[in-house]
Length: 343
Image 1 (tube, helix red, strand yellow):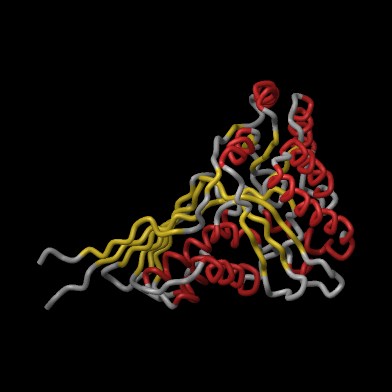
Image 2 (image 1 turned 135 degrees about the horizontal axis):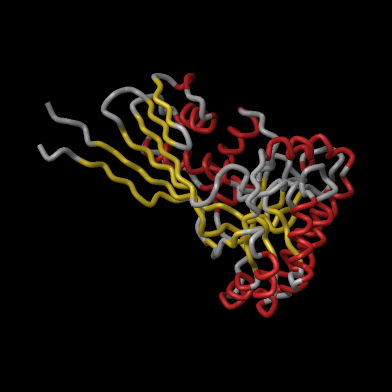
C-alpha cells in the first residue's frame, strides 16, 4: 500500500511598529455613527518575526508547542485560543503538530505579536489545506477571530500590518465601517535609511497584559473623542512628514502622540517609564512612544544621530536596545515541503 507524503510548512510573519494614530483603529471609534471621519494609523513592519510551523502527524492527535505544550484529541480541548480558532476556521481538525516561535518576548511586547501569531497560523493552515488567501483576507479573518469570536478589546491595525507588511497608512471607515483602506508609503531608499537611522528601540523590561489597558481604552472612547480625533489627525500629518522627508517634524509628532495617548486610560505609562522617556528627551531624543497599548514592552525613540550616544548612556541599565530594520514583506511561507517516502 502506497504511503501518503508527509507535509511541513513554516510561515514567517513580521511584527510592527505603530507610529501614530493608535487607538483610532478600534471599531468602537471609527465605526461609531458619531464619527464622520473614521480613524487612521501610520506605521511599519520590522525584521522581527513570529514563526508558525505546521507539521502533519501520523496519528490523529493535536500537538501544540508554545510556552506550554498541549497534546489533545479534539479542537474543543485546546487551551491556546488563537490556535483553536484558527484551526476551526480553516477546517483543520486533527493529525497535526503546531509550533510557534518568536524573535522577541511575545507577552506584552506592544509589537502586535498576538495578531502576528493569528495571521501566521492562518497563512500556514490554509497552505496546509492547499488553499490560497490574499493578505487582506488573512487580516480580515484574523480580526474576526480576535475581535468577534474571542471578543478581545483591540484595534485592527496589527493584523493588517502583519499580513501586508511595509510602511503604510491605514484609514478605517468612515464611508463604510467594514472597509479598510491602505496605501504604502514608498519612500526613496535614502529616506528610508535616514528615518531608520534616527529611530531607536528599547525593551523596558516590563511586560503587561494588554487586555486590561485596551479594555479601559475602549470603555473610555465616548469621553475621549476629541483626543482620538487629534490622534487620527497626527497619523495624517505623520504620513505627510514621512513622504516629504520632514523627519524631525515627524519626531515631534511622536511626542505629541505620547502626550495625547496618556490621556486615553490609566496604566498606559507610569512613573518609571516617564523617567526613562524624560531622560531620553533630556539627552536629545525628539519624541517617542510606547509600542502598542502601553504599560511596558518596547519604547521607540526618534533621536538624531548626533544625540544617540548620549541617549544610550542616559538609559544604560534601565533598558535594553533592540537593533532592527524595516521589513517590506508581510506574512509569507518560507518553507513548504511534502516529503515522499523513499519506498
